[in-house]
Image (cartoon, rainbow, N blue to C red; front, side, top):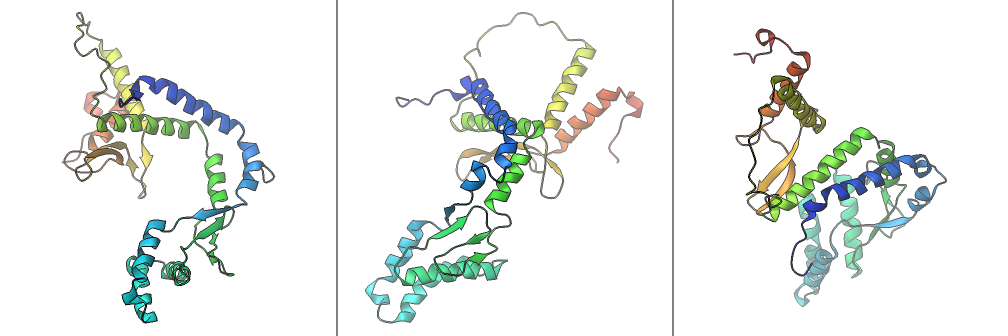
Length: 276
């Protein structure tokens, strides 16, 4: 606005409140959304365009192939189109990949930009030929949407809200905003020390929050999303926490274990110790 980036973090509560309200609205009408005769089902019965490669890439390949040097023999023209197959040589599913490449090549031979379409309730692609390419998706878009709507719950809502807060942190980090509200120089009076029980309660609440933000990785292990700086792009992104020198899950596990110890008030002599 006027060349000034608005302080989004000043409106975090409002944004998260609106997201939660919309989430609960969808959760409340989930039965209608999942109905086979509902409006959502009919929308997924329509055709939608599938972008396999960018139009700019197709145009670049076609312009290069139309150079007079490659128009004297069909082989020379065909070689220029073979660049489409370069990244697919090591594909795990060659049958599917080559079917897509054949469809692309056929369109380019007609001097057309390849165009793929798919129905939202099918897992096949239509490349303009009479035979669709079946098995392009593990599940149809409709099946995926149904699974997502059916999974709306309080646990997922807390996870989505946590991710939203994480995106605000990413934005502040990339803008060089330290998140302070202008009270950095404010002086505080003498702070009364907290008692042992109060400190234990705060520690337990913190550990519960850490545990609530955990998610399952592909290998089944627990993970947490953290800010990760990429030197190549000079930007921060949200990435799963890694086991390296600077970001490791060990302290987080220790925090969760500490919560378990606090909850049960286990005597110090009986608390878990790491094996030597």
